[in-house]
Every structure is written in C-alpha cells, then in structure tokens.
Image 1 (cartoon, rainbow, N blue to C red):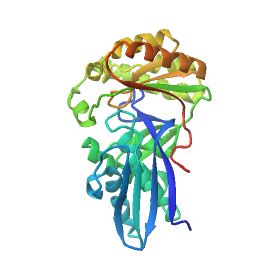
Image 2: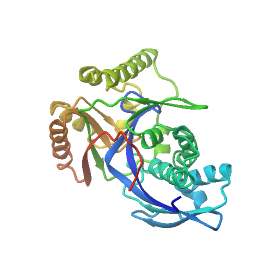
Image 3: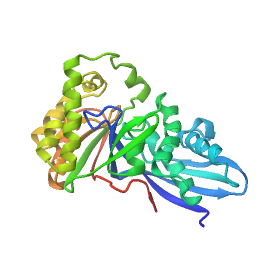
Image 4: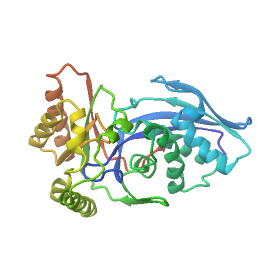
Length: 307
C-alpha cells in the first residue's frame, strides 16, 4: 500500500442560485494540490503551505481539523503529514476552505485502503469547514468529494444525493479580487422570508433537479433564479447586476453568486457560449479598478482525483 499520495482538490460552486446550503457542483480547471504522507510518528502535522498565509497548527487549519476528526475516530497505527499547495484564494466563494477540508480526509482514506465511503468523508470534512464558516454545511464539500452536481438532502444524519450532469453544460466564473468571509455574508441574511418567495424558491430547486435529470436546458435556465439570498448578498459584490444582465444577453442560461461571493458564476450550454460569457464578464469588470480573474470549466464529474 502506498505511503504518499498527491491529489487535485477542486474548487466548487455552492448554492447554484436557488439551492442555498443544499446544492453545489464541482469545477474542473480550478483547484488546490495536496500531498498526504503516512508517518511512523502518530498524529496530524501540516508541514508545508504554499500560495497563501495559513496556519500550520492542525487545530487552526481547516485541512487539519477535518483530518483530526477522522484520525481520532479511526485511530490508525500511523500518523500523517499534509502539504497544501493553495491555488484557490481564501474568501473567494469557490470553496477554498472546502477544498482543503475535503482533500485531507480523501488523501488519508486512500492511504488507509479506503475504509470510509464518500458520505463519511464528507461528514469529517464538515468539521473543518465549520472552522471557516462557523457552521457545519456540506454544499461545497459534497461536490468536491462526489463530483458533478450534488444535493445535500439532510445534514444530520448526513445524506447526499448525486445528480446527473448534462453533457454540454459549462460553467464560467469571474473572481473579483476582494474577500467576503462566509460568516459575514451569512450574518446579513434575514431570519424569515415571505411565503411567496419560499414557494418560488423551492419550485426552482425542484425544476433545476428535474432539468439536470432530463438535460432540459430551457428548464435549467428558468430555474436558475434566486429570490431569497441574492437580493441581500449582491450588495457585497461590486457590479453584480451589470455582470448578470450582460452575461444573460451573451447567452448564459443563468447567473448567480457562487457560494457567499464575491465570485459570480454562469452556466451555459456549450463551450463557445461559455467563452462568450467569459468575455462579457471581462468587459464589465475591465471598466472598474478591481483586479479579477475569469475561468471557463466543464463540470467535473469525478471530484477529487489522484495525480
């Protein structure tokens, strides 16, 4: 059995417009790399971090917290070292913390001979994610571990449903180089919502799930609408309305905030449209003084993978 593994832990988009805290999908071109290594000395140690300034103490790093939760329960006769090569900017809204939290438990599980299934890995990764967002939720974690689109049916006990991905579906993202902490973006949300908005939202969730199952791109387009969260969070993201209006004119099926922001995602049918959408995003933000990055990605149906 191997003593070392190098993995790609992908970025993800959570909420997917109408599915706050329950829906997510996995990206293919953006992600962290991690090396997990078995050691004779017991315990969890983070030995290298490149890319961003993050804590080395396992108890203060999301990768370490999720690893410790899994390690303490399994109590293997070895320890683990973790190296993190961070390509996803913390606070970007595309699952930076979840990539770390999911990557560490995935790598350990592989080196131990896969004693745990994907649901259990997601459960332990939630412990690390809670360090970043002050609550346990799996909408970013589940697509990283399962791949494709996922729906978190229940958080306690955890139940994750894998949803199909239409073959010609592409994601385009713009990441303005500002930081929005998940905990802060949750704090501005209302505790109660009007009944009519709730009805609209759960109709959209059901429609989106059906659209994914039937590859009905028109239904997906109609469903990608958030009447509950977006009206509050968009005020934290400069030029959000301009981006949304412009990309819809460019042919996107829908556009919404990725996770808690500031990244904005759009879904499109076909790579050519996705690239037109990328140019539309670029045109809006190039007029501002905010640095930004854009990406086009096929939906990653594999999730975390060994390199």
